[in-house]
Length: 274
Length: 235
Picture (spheres, chains in turn yellow, orange):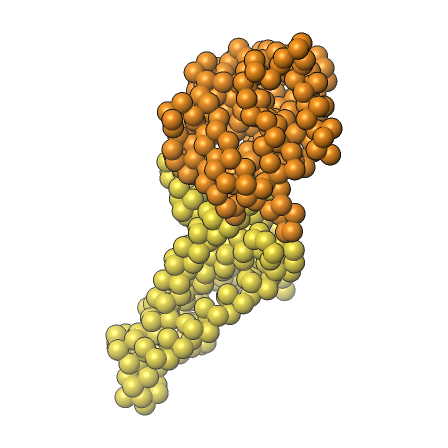
């Protein structure tokens, strides 16, 4: 049954966000043409900037679209159908969370993909290949090899993915709370307040956890060291390197998963469909 | 006698703010009956139906369908037709049929497609491009294609022309499972008068009358006459 829920939620969300993808491809296509046929470097750079701006815009819009779709299909008039299906409320919510996340990640992947494609094209135009260019760029920026940078990029990508999960969950939580009487009287304002409050609270506690449990990795001279106390390990390397704490993202991931419980409880016991 | 009654409501209270809509409502709905739920606007008919379908949770008292609180199990045996359309904007009629087919084990896809065709609806037409009457027909086709134990129809003919009304009524009568219970709320008492076997009158948040139609209709009175009589004393 969960598979059917997910399939239908992905379909429903696709119909509301397909316009965003269309815009991405149009803007991306135009920028691509600029890069391919441009006579001077300035146009190439401008094309890349346009692509990145369009993707950034899409990343913001996708979150709004996913949140609106959740509200519409769960607590709007479509809720008369959704909430009378013979399925567990937790399955309903998980399905909407997963489908929302899938589309969000697709847009983010397009964002990063288009960014790296742009770097690749610029690299080609300048006569070098991608690896050389990227290596030079990263060494120039951080003084580290491509291998190290890939490890760090992976870390940050996972961080971003978890952060996006938290954003989606906080949005769903805020929307669900704002449908409870008497909070619902505040309308959209309640959604905004609850979203930022819950997000800030979890990020704040994540920061605390990061300080209290400094488990993670330290990158020093292109060598990755796993450590239960990254601060001390970095000090041992005379502060020459980078520390990446795992406890923070793990806490954020667990918090995001646990947020599903209050959302399900509220949707099942407190929210009335008008 | 839980077996004879599909729905048992006991001491049900529900308010919106300070306004008490259902005040200590207790009633039982027998199986295999076509029950008319009557009452003036705002008397709590829709609220009662939403509680039965599990769309409203913050009430006090007990409500059971087949001995279970409204939830996953009762939703599997209850077919609900709300006042407003519930089909997603993006859905075509065929998508709505597939959606029902995905989730309701008692749904007969072939029957739904036949009903849609009989109503003259295009399976590939999008729900949002249809008129209110057409949407009503689609929702009825979906709801009545289920072999449910309890059908809850909230104003199934509200907002449609008289010709369509009789078509819809005929349609409901031909397509519901005969062992099932039908709970229909309507203001159009005259149009449905002949089909009801049981009547529930709801007013001032209370059940004013809950009886077999045969017992209610004495001295050649119609349900509408009784309705006027009951509610002239209430309002």
